Length: 144
Image (cartoon, rainbow, N blue to C red; front, side, top):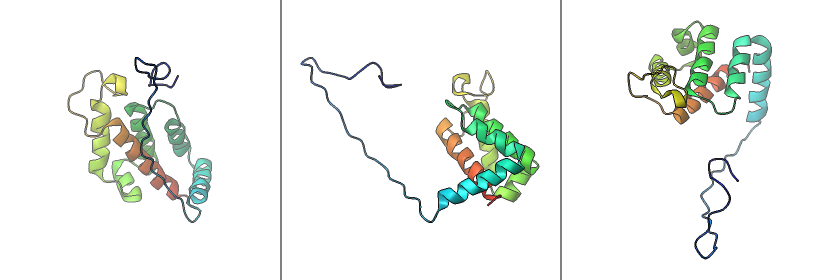
C-alpha cells in the first residue's frame, strides 16, 4: 500500500496488472555544493535561533501555507522586516507579498491562515514551498 495511491495494485478483470513508467529528472551536484550548504547551515544554526526555528519548520512533514509563512516571519525577524529581506537576500517585496496573500487565501485544509479567503492565492502550495526553499538557501548562504 502506498500513501495516496490506495490499497494494493490495480488489476483488470482478467487479473492483469499494468504499470506505466514515468520520466525521471536527474540532478547533478558539482564542486562540493552540498558540503558548502551544510557548512553554512551549521554556522547559521549556531548563530541564529530564527534560522534554527525556520529550518525546523521546513523539515516538518505535511507542510502547510502557515508553516511557509512562519518561516518567512522568522526571516523578517532576522533581517528587520520585508525591506531587510529584500536588502540582504534580494527577494523582492512583491514576491514576499505574494507569499503572504497566498498563505491568507488558501483553504484551511491547505494550511491557509484564515477561515475565509478574501482573494485568489497568488502561489500554489508547491510554489510557496519552492519560494521558501530559495529564501532558506539565500539565508544560509549568509553564513558561508
